[in-house]
Image (cartoon, rainbow, N blue to C red):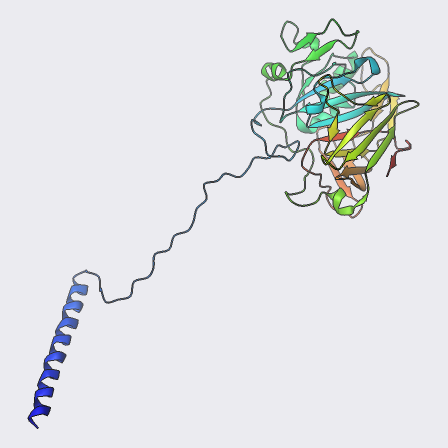
Length: 354
């Protein structure tokens, strides 16, 4: 019995001590101190990323630097005596324009890469307005007929810095070793410095996201070789090189090679069928010339990338409005990121793809 009393006494003491401890904890909590017996929630933090999103060039869809300036377009002679050309292999976009039967000129557009020299430089044509208007570039050329210049200057969102408008500057140089009139070359950086334009171009085409196929690759139609006749004796051929993933260009006399020794190549080749007529669409001196009917126009296209092709329809509203390109399925045309050459044969040209 004494043992039970002793145990009870000890238990009573323990209970008293525990009660006192609880009371102290409550008092401390009421005084504003934390209840050390309460479970603490683990601290969490939201991870933040300081890595900036890559900047994509608007005219290629590739990651690039130094893009905060306008594009520079240069009209380039493409007759046999004008070769070898300079700089066209480094353009973001090149338009091959039919100037007459078996006669083309190039409209080369530079933005992500500016060569020191481009040329030989030649004159303006009406088709330059709707092709360049959507990107608002600085435009290098050797002027043109009065009515053509009046038309282009009045309708297109471009800064036309032809040779006579910047005489005395270093924007153009003459190579005395070249035959006239294919002896003038443009300096894109100097043209930029002379221009009042400051804005970078808007995207001209749409591109497939990284690691995803272009529309041509997804369609998987034949597209390893493209042959385009611009007239008797003037066939242009593009051949896909699987080793580089690029198309190589050939002119009627052989490889299209620049003065630097590089064969012209492209990641994308876009063929736009476009109606044309010989006409004058402005006042002033000068003969009628081919007018490509882009404004309020539409037609068919074939796009090649990755050794494959896809077909669809293009349409365009005003001079400065962008092209709308839809595949036969109705989806937006997606090119592969990289440079693009646009060929502009007549709709009845016997273009072949295999």
